[in-house]
Length: 297
Ligand code: GLU
Image (tube, protein in one colour):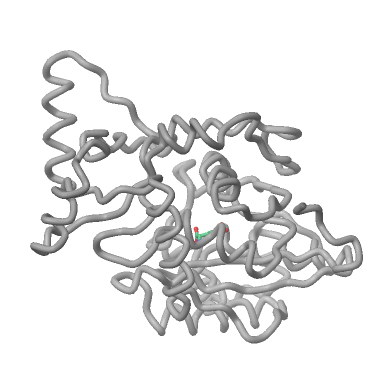
């Protein structure tokens, strides 16, 4: 049902969040997507993942356009900005709620921390997700519908989370993806249980990365997801959501990460590898290609 249409060109996308300056890691991602698309006569899209309005700013968004233009990349217009499509993500969330797969999660970060600390003090190791965050306690899965409505109506702050046990029971059979990147390759089994009840809709910002990314990749008919190896494990969640929401499966290529002098993944606050900083210091676009280990485009 979801086989790629052989008559349509492959579609690649670079999808930064404008919450900081782009650095060399972003340059590698953007250039790879651009060059891979050109090499196969495909399309290259830019998507602005700005749902978190508390951290994303118009200045950082403008800097994305400036940096990519300077690098010599060209992308299709109009650019999809996630903040303009909240209703689209909301209707998918509503569908998952109707299917009984999403529940309101009322525990605050502090309450989760306290529950974890208490269990660990009692000698129970609390499970962590692949990013190292403690899994959300499963208590809220069992709150009655009446109690949920009462709490929501009285204004209780809540997120929406996926009931991973239910999701696994209906959609995890043989779940996998096709990996063509720089790490493990081939058919990768999607280990979704490691993530626990992931957030679908945040209490402080609409939608979540996981929900909006799979919806947009489908809507924009992205055939090749090329992004950093830091998102490799998240792909399990994306495959699960694709199956639950009946969305097509793209191919995945998780590329090597550019590490800082301390051997850790670059962060947006590290000015020294920021593209704007390197440009101001006199670097050229071909210097950037060389620094990230890619030849001329
Ligand atoms: N917006 C995500 C980020 O900036 C990337 C999303 C993706 O490529 O799937 O880390």
